[in-house]
Image 1: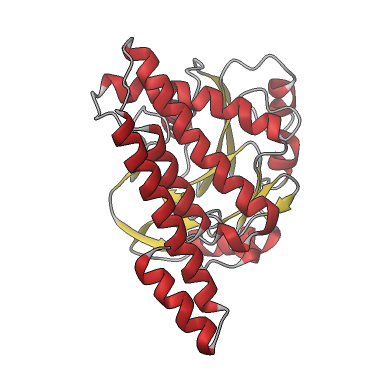
Image 2: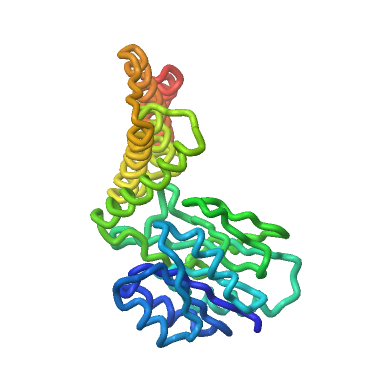
Length: 297
């Protein structure tokens, strides 16, 4: 058997059939379900007999390892239940698995559809993920959002729309907030268990917000780009707050420390705003903005 598609599910009845239809080219489809209460299992059974159950721990990484262990193919294509493999990518995958190559793992770009549109800014593109790999060469730690351990040569497929997985990501603000609440709780517990150093809310918000707005060009992504930059920054604040709560102690900076953190936020924001203005200005105006960027005002 050459290629196995593995899919992990949890109450995915609204999206799963679309996903399954896009991967029928595989030699095998494996579905591992995390105790769904909707029609997920009924839909999965229409496309494969290889349907398994695993405990629901609130995140996908343990189920991924289990699903890979159930696959029989020499190549594994990992697909989420809200993703679609387009025809051009399908053809590329088939060709890739049929040639001799030293590559053990291919990273594939993802086209994230968020709040109804493809988001290319604020760090959401090309969003390469390790999705096509030889069995036995990729494994995840049983921790939320952990990066996989990969043995062997790695290659990235081109960051082209026609070679990207279509990911129907957050469909609404409410869905984003629900997931954020679940993921930040799990991440905060791990944060406390690992005795990671505590960070202030202003600092974590500043780092995430400014990184996504400016180096990752969220500011160029219209309403969605700016909104997602703030939402990701807020997510970091929520995780930090929960870690304080789980430690059952209040961590409060002094007024002077908080003012210093706010001043650093102001200064860095001034720098990046001036940097953007320099790019779109010329002559005396550009010179003035360079001075403002230099002195952060």
